[in-house]
Image (cartoon, rainbow, N blue to C red; front, side, top):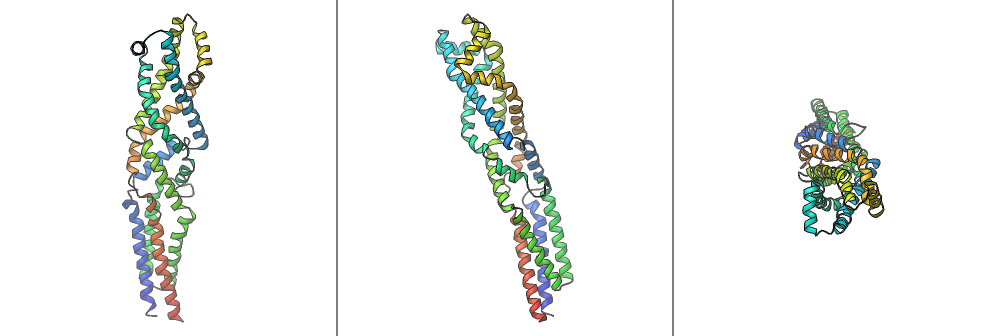
Length: 327
């Protein structure tokens, strides 16, 4: 009997250490406060990264980029040739008479060139985002993770104190069972897989929420909106007049010769609200994302699984040794 008591106390001590490690982990991983930012980001982009949202994003992006490309590379050069102006004279006239078009021509294509290579990866984030959005489990918000860990750690440490104060086989068994739960529950909830998904989402976020891209996305959306307004209210009527056509006739010509431009002009009123909303969400999420960077996401599940293994090991050894001693 005397040999059994110290081992049970060691199991209790292991539980105390494990509980302290779990309780400290939200602070060690900088989760307190920053997890709220993660919740805000997932709330902002939950629809965008749904299947429906991604389909809308792909369609809207393709339409807007196609409109810009055809307008800048085909329609404007054709109008310049029809006006019998040199490229430099046409550009000077453009800057004077159509400042929004000139501004978009200069500033939109470089942003599109940066964003285009990232689009396939962003469109493929649905499954990973879904895993991250399901953290921790049972529909609980991400912001609850630090407090779950803190409460769990306190509970485990309290169990360890109780077993340490009143050692015995029952206490050793409780430590082993609790350790098994700490190992099994994160694995059943796919916590390591979700952590891997979070790392991939974080990599994408480094681009989406970078200090340059977020404001550039918003500025580009506003430039496209100004471009569309100026094309419809000034450029088409005045170009039509120069060609001795009515605005309706020139618009019909645009639809025939430049279908991507016509499609974009028609679709923009429905694209604009979502595009502006997403861009503003990017800007609003910059600080929240910056606070999340540096958190070792892959290590986080092991802040529970590791202490669980410790408790399972010491609890099982104490239980087996106690059974041998009593036999």
